[in-house]
Image (cartoon, rainbow, N blue to C red; front, side, top):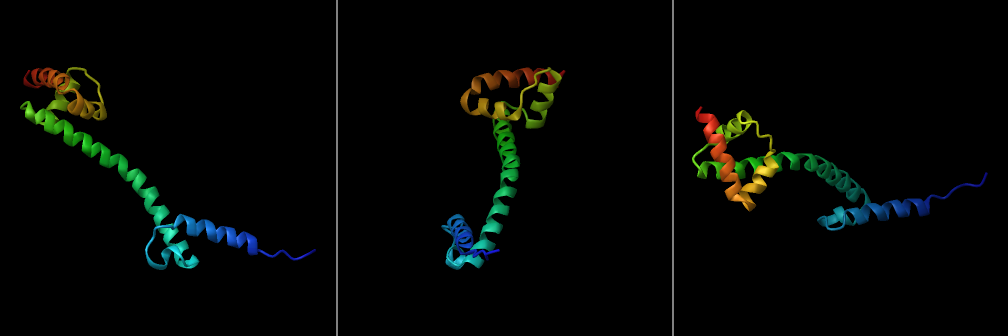
Amino acid sequence: MPRVKKGRTAHRRHKKVLALTKGHRATKHSLYRRAHESMLKSLSYAYRHRRERKGDMRRLWILRVNAASRAQGLSYSQFMNGLRKSGIEINRKLLADMAVREPESLANLITIAKGKVQD
C-alpha cells in the first residue's frame, strides 16, 4: 500500500479557512492556527445572531406600533388588547409596516380598538 501525502488536502483546507477569515484583524487572517480559532468564533457569533435578529425585529415592530398608537392616544398594550377583543388578527410585522407606509389605515384600526377598550 503506497503512503498518502496530505499536502494538497491540508493546503486546500488552510486556504479555505484563510479565505473565511479575510478581513479579520492582525494575525487572525494570515496565520492558520489563529485564523481557525477566529473562524470558529465568528461562525458561532453568526449562528447566535441570526437567532437574536428575530427578537430584535419584533422589538422594532412593537416600538413602531407603540409610537403610532400613542400618537392616537392609546398605549400599545391597550391597542393590542382592543384588536384582540374586536377579533382582528393581524401580526406585529404588518402593523409596523402599516405604521410606516399607511398611517391612515392604522389610525382606523386604532379607533376600532379604542372603541372595544372603552366598552
